[in-house]
Image 1 (cartoon, protein in one colour):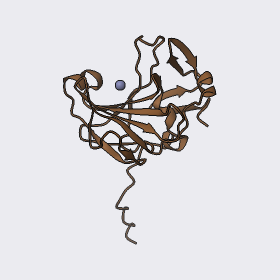
Image 2 (spheres, helix red, strand yellow; image 1 turned 180 degrees about the vertical axis):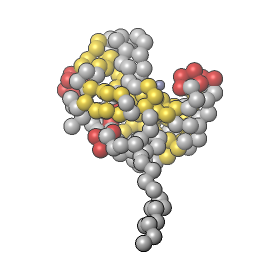
Image 3 (cartoon, protein in one colour; image 1 turned 180 degrees about the horizontal axis):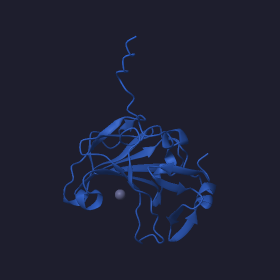
Image 4 (cartoon, rainbow, N blue to C red; image 1 turned 60 degrees about the vertical axis):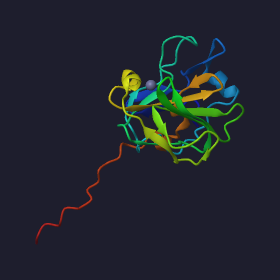
Amino acid sequence: MADGAVVSAGGTVAAADGAVAAVGGTVATAGEAAAEGAVPAVGRYWPVGARPPVLRGWEPPATPYGPGHRGVDLGAPPGTPVRAVAAGRVSFAGPVAGRGVVAVELSGTGDPPLRTTYEPVRASVREGESVAAGQVVGTVEGPGPASAAHCGRGCLHWGLLRADAYLDPLLLLPPWLLNTGPPRLLPVLAAPPPPT
Ligand SMILES: [Zn+2]
C-alpha cells in the first residue's frame, strides 16, 4: 500500500501522510485524497533509466499558486529515452512555452484519471495514441534556455495530476521499484580462479 508508506527514493523521503495536494484553493491531506481515490501504485517503470537520481523532489505548494515544485526532477542526459510508467493514452504531445511536453492519462485510475507529464521531451507519440507500460514516448530534449533554467544540465521533470490537482508522481511507483538499490555493475567477466 502506498497510503501512509514512507518511501525513500534517490535520497529523498516522501511521506504520503504528510503529502498535501492543493485542490480548489484548499489544501487536502493525502488522507482526504484517499477518500476520493488516492494514487494507486500502478507504475511499472521509472520514466528514465532503471533508478535515476532524484535531483529535486516533490515540494507541494502551500497555496495553489504558491512557490513549490510540482513534480520531481530525474537526472537524465539529453537523448535519454522516456518511458510511460504505466499503460494509458497520450492526452497531449507537443511544445508548451518552448518545452516539449508529453502527457499520458493512466488507464484504470478513476475519473478523472491520473495524468502523468514528462518534460522537456521530444515526443515520438501522438495525442490519442495508446501506450503500454514501459513504451518509449520520446527522448529528453537538450538543455535549451528554458529547460536549462529548470533542470540545469539534463533532467526530466515528471509530474502527476488528477484534474488540476498536482500530486507526487513517486506515489505511482510500488516499493519494489522505489526501493531497489541503484543498478550495480556486477562484474561481467568474473575474475579467473587463481592458478593452482
Ligand atoms: Zn522540475
